Image (tube, rainbow, N blue to C red; front, top):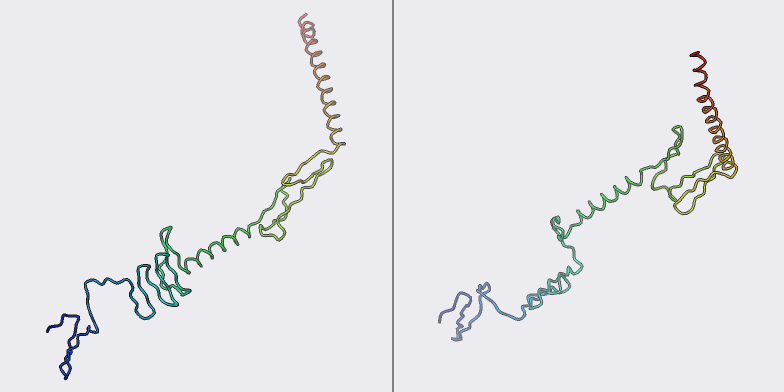
Length: 190
């Protein structure tokens, strides 16, 4: 009797012959429905480690264990590692802080400006628009309405009437001057 490369033959003193597999065997192919090695099971559904991770048709389950030595993701559908996540979070936080520290100030006549207010001001930004003499302001929603007070409106109308009268008087005087000019010229010629 001859054993193959994976078998071992033992012959006992009483003449009994025992065929056993060697401790280290090599096969070209193994077909099995389920293979159990300690806490690990491999079957048609995938690989499962009792109380540990599994890779099955349903997906990857890390079994609440840390997945270590993960390379940085590159493509859009790659996973990221904790270092990449921390870098991205830090960049976002820095950008938000930089933006929040920006200020806004409003400018008025003659180079006047309001005090600058930071974008992250508690309670939000607010600038008051005050009306001067004869002007009132009203804020509603996101709009500010600037209105001339009634007295100012009356003065404006009176001023318009006065301007119209001055224009009429100037035009009349101009017409008189133009009518008189040829007479004056004719007097000078004689």
